[in-house]
Length: 230
Image (cartoon, rainbow, N blue to C red; front, side, top):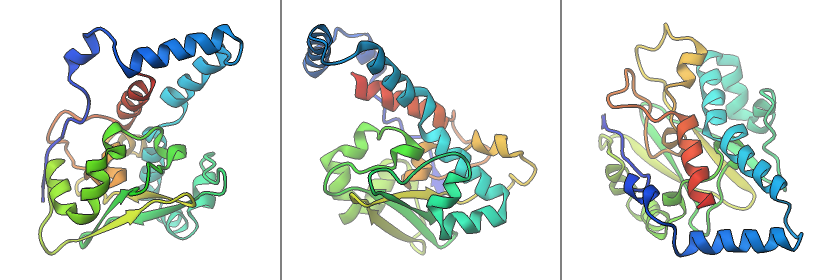
């Protein structure tokens, strides 16, 4: 199995370029709604802060690492995911949705998509990355999952079954990545630092030691929040 980090973020130069198009329209609309008292600027800033710092893929990484570290918790996570995740202080049953946790094994690799829109486990992974909502990913994840994984720098042996799971209004999926060999001596916090957002969507795996500069789940969460804010 081979993997390398795949950069899905915007070109760094793009962040230094003048804002235009949708970003400017969003800011103009925000300013107008704030001026008319329809939107509270402080509440909006608090919401953005929540998306950037209080929720995000670092939450999912903590759940996955705890499951690696505690076999009894892992069993509960796979059989009663909503209740098990709630043990760590995270509520997943929002607006009638339920969580399903999918375990990657040496023989099975799981990948998550939403073919209809962009349903995503926000409670444990934060805001979805832009590529997750793209038409290309939503279509190809089902028709050509190996090709998609290859685009992410992940080549799986032919004898590994790839299962693609389609999210819905009622169900959200979280992939429990396979724990890499050689991590038996690591603490739970050290394990958290290894787990990436992509590995919990199924477009990546966890490696140890990291073969390339690691994008932590916390860093990926801030990046996604910044993309959505424009």
